[in-house]
Length: 146
Ligand code: CMP
Image (cartoon, rainbow, N blue to C red; front, top):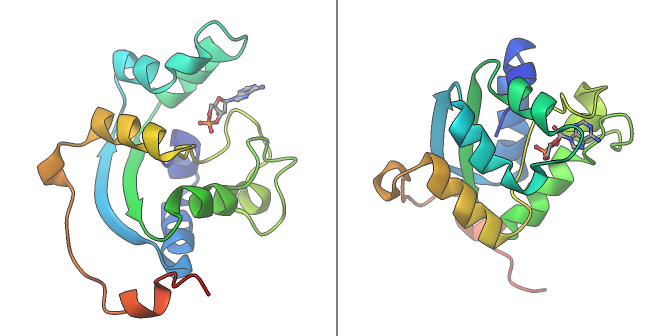
C-alpha cells in the first residue's frame, strides 16, 4: 500500500517504479480513501498501541493506493525494497531510506507473510479484480534455485 504521505508528496510513480524495475508483476491496483472500519481491520494487530489512534487518523487522512505484486519471493523482496519501518533507520537505497524521515509517515506498507498478504488482499480486492497474465520477461526472472 502506498500511504497518504507518499501520494501527497507525489511519490507514487517513484515507488511503483521501484517494484516494477525489480521484476515484480503488478496484478491489482486500487486508489481509495480508507474508511475507518477498513483501516481498523488493516491495523487490527496494533490496536491499543500508543501510536494506534494517530496511525488510523493518518491512514484515513487521504488517498491510499492498494497494490498486489506477484513474483519470486515477493513478500521478502517488497519488504527489502521498502526498508525498515522507521525511515530514519531504513537503509539508503530503500524506499523509506531514500525518501522518508518519519516512522508513522513511512510512505508504504507491505504484508509480512503470505498469510498476511492473503488477509490484506481480501480486504481490498475481489478475486476478479486481480489480473492473470504472463510477462514476456518471466523466464529471465524465474528463480531456478541456482
Ligand atoms: P506499517 O508497515 O504500515 O505497519 C504499522 C504502521 O504503524 C507502520 O508502518 C507505521 O506507519 C506505524 N508505526 C509503527 N511503529 C510506530 C511508532 N513507534 N510510532 C508511530 N507509528 C508507528
